[in-house]
Structures are given as structure tokens and as C-alpha cells.
Length: 233
Image (tube, rainbow, N blue to C red):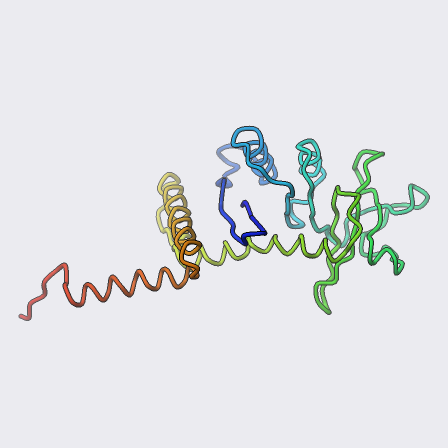
């Protein structure tokens, strides 16, 4: 998903169907493919890659490094890291101690199984009273936790997309068993969402308002001028 934080607009620019029995690819393989296609073939201009904990793997981080892009991603609480320059054993990220200054500016760490000289910046971000995220970035010049939290908020556009496409297009309602038909259904659902989003950006209305107007307009027209005449027996 491509997000323009200045315009507060976002679009789906690529997708993959997870089917390891057919192509033998993992979800990480698919993400790497899409990143390489976006940069090398489509020449999409972007600066930052955001992802959730599931995709925060050393493989993807290295791919993003090689593409000369910045990433922000949360680590699982049990991810092993070192903030002592190899003076102490690795420990779970949730067990790290934080000074007052580090809570504001973050700290340099090494993630286990990363290259020996590879350091990333870690930030402790308090999301709510009962939730804390540990965000890493390869932008070691970043020194403000508040800015890191602002960057990561953009990631929630993917949740908005999932909610909209499920509620408005029936993407989960396909009852066909053939893979080709299921893929066609997914593609059509994405086209519908894209068109609704395009209209919403032009009119300033939400996608929910756009769809409601389309349905109400159709029903109103059918009631006044029914396409199929009815007769009483």
C-alpha cells in the first residue's frame, strides 16, 4: 500500500495471493517481490517502509537497507537484542532498562542474527496505559520518540483499507471453489474499492457515503421506473 501522509490519501499498488502449495513462496517472499517490483520496475517514489511485527525479519530489513530506504517496525517483546556493545548476553527487548534520556531519544542496539556491525535505533513507544511498542529503525539519526510514533501511525491506513474492502465489496463472500474464480473475485473487489476511493477523494465524502448514495439512487430509480414490470395474478 502506498500512503501520501501530506494528502492523507492511500492506494493499493500491488498484491499477492498467498498460495504456497502452488508457488512455494512464503509471505516474506511475496513482500520482497513487491518491494523490488515497486522500486526496480514501477519506479515508485517513496522514502519509508512501515510494517507490523510479523514482517520484522532480518531478511526484509536487509532488503530495505539495500534499496536505500528507511524502515520503522515494531519488535516482538521476546526478540533478543543487545544494547551493551557485546558486554552482556542478549536479552528480550522487553527486559531492557531505559534511562530518562533514552526514553526521549532512543538507543542503539544490535538484533540477534544481524551482521556484527549492523546497529539499529530502538524506541520505546507507549501506545496506551496497557500497551507499549518497541520500534526499530535503520535511521540512526532519528532521535525523537514522538516523531517515531507519528511515523508509525501511518501504518494504520492498512487497517482502514481492510475494514473498507471487507464491508463494502464482499471480498470475503466468494463461495466458489476454483482458484481462478476466487482470484477473479479478489481482483474485482480491489477494483471496486479503488473506484470508490477515487470518487471519495474527488468529492470529499467517505467511501461509505459514496456506496450508500449509489444504492439509494438505484433503488429510487427502480421504484419509479422498474426495469422489470410486475403484475398481480
